Amino acid sequence: GITQSNHKPSVAAYFEPRYNITKDIQLYVGVSGESISFANRAAAEIDFYGGARWTIGPVVLDGGFWYYYYPGGQCFNGGTPSGAASGDCLANSFLPNGNTVKSDMSFWEVYFKPTWNVNDSLAIGGNLFYTDSFMHSGAPGTYISGTAKFTAPEKMALGPFGWYVSGEFGRQYLGTTDSFYSLTNTLSGPGIDYADYNTWNVGLGLTWKVFTLDLRYSGTDLSKGDCNAFTGDFQASQTGNITAINPGGIGSNWCGSTFIAKLSADLTLGSLK
Image 1 (cartoon, helix red, strand yellow):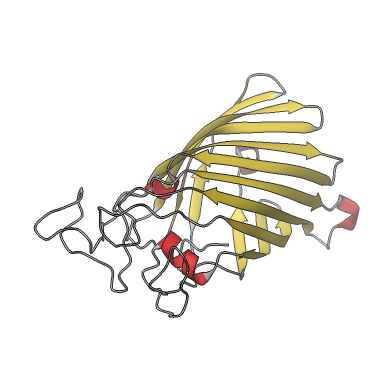
Image 2: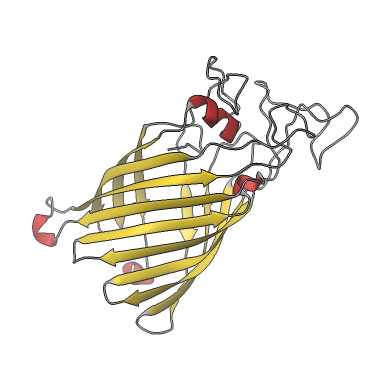
């Protein structure tokens, strides 16, 4: 429900080595990179992660650790006192619309993702993510969601294409930031108590060999005002979106309903032979 690319196309790539301890227990590590468009002008998102998958009959338990690294960011905070600096935040630097953002938005999460394969076609799952500082804001974050996916059997193929439908409904719980983000736009003010919000998506995927075309509708109930306070959107300009944590009334369109088309290729050593 929230764009990380300013509604523009994004490219991504990943590499995930895996090791099977037994037929039911698998260890994995991975690295991935995505193009983004953040308010702090970070160059990209680089992810490092690792975990384990444990299969117990029709149930798969997946848990691990994820680190989101955003290199090359710049700090903007117009509340920095003249002649002073906050970390690498230059005095009186600010985004054109008055929003503030840290140069370093990197953070870690731990996660747990159980899946119940009801049969060969239907899978029901859940997600639990936790961090003590979401986007390095100082605000703890907990994300909980439920998922469902129906993968069509071969007899239901659309010509050469396999297909699936899937959906997710989740809720993001957020706490209070550190004093860098504050309603007074100064480094001495109290932090912002970010708004919790719901998010959802539903979509159809077409598969052919190693390729997948996923067509998806995604949304959130986060308001434009609370979205601006949460994201620091550098293009936010709409007025009249006053909320408790966004008294200036500037609204962001980075949160809300949108359509996403994703074309991906997932290669394994077997598929390359």
